[in-house]
Image 1 (cartoon, rainbow, N blue to C red):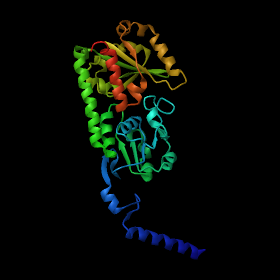
Image 2: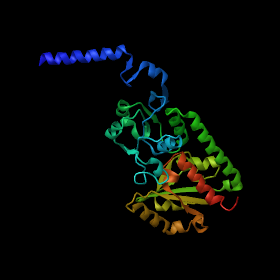
Image 3: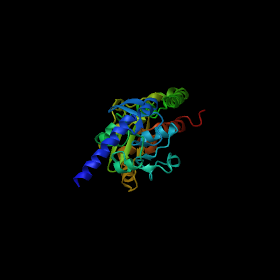
Image 4: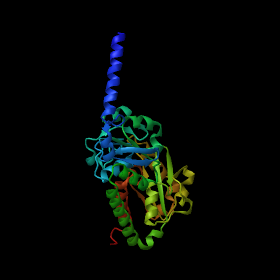
Length: 319
C-alpha cells in the first residue's frame, strides 16, 4: 500500500513537470503561447481577469447581460432565468432556445454552471459577490459593479469582456441617435413631468432617476415631478403617498409572477379614491406598460422597446 502511494505521488510529480516543460498554464489549460496570443485582460468590479479573446461558451448571470450578449451576436450556453417568463422574457424567448437555465440572479446554481464547461462567466457584484471565488475556479469571471441605472456602463464592460467593443460602440451609437431623433420630434413635450410607478405583491414603489427607465427618460430630456427629480433608485410607498405619484404623464408597471398577487395590488391601488383623484388619471394620461420592458429586463433590447412605447404614447399620429 505504501509503495502504491509513493508510485502515485511520483506519477503526479512527473505529470506536473511535463506540463511545466511544455509551457502549459495549469490555471487555464492553455499553453503560454496561446495565452499570449488569444487572451486579453479585463478590469472589472472585482479586479483584473485574463479572459479568452474569442469566448465560445459564455455563461451570463444578469438579465441585462443576457440582452447585451444577444445584441452583440452571442448566444450564451447558460443564463439566469428571466424575472418574468417561462423561463425567458417574451421578447427574447426565440433567441434563447436551447440555452440552459443556471438559477436566478439572486440564487445561481454553481453545479449547473460548472456542468456547461464555460470559458467565460459574466456576472454582477451587487447580485453575486459571495459566489465570485467559486465562479472564478470554474472559468475566468468578470463582474459589473451594480445594476439599476448602470445598464450603459455595464453594456460597455460586457462588450469588452467578449472582445466586441467596436460592435458595442456601434449599437450604443445607434441607440443614442434614436434617442436624439425622438427628442427632436417631441419638441416641447419633453417639458412634461413623467411619473413612474411599480406595483408588486402587497406594495408599490415610485421610481426615480437612478433606475433603468429613469436613465432613459432623462436621456430623452423629459422632466420629472420635483419630488422625483433625484439620483436615487426608488421609494416603497403606502397608499397615503398616492398623491406623490402625480405628474403630467404617469407610466406604471406590475411585477406579476403568476400567482395573481401583484395584479391584486394593482387593482387595489388603481381603484383607490386617491388614485382616481389624480389629475393625470382624470386626464387619461396614466398608462400601463410592461414591467419586463420598463424595468426588469434592463438591457439594450428592452431599452429600444421602451423607446417604441415612448413613440407610441407621444408621437403616434404626429409624424
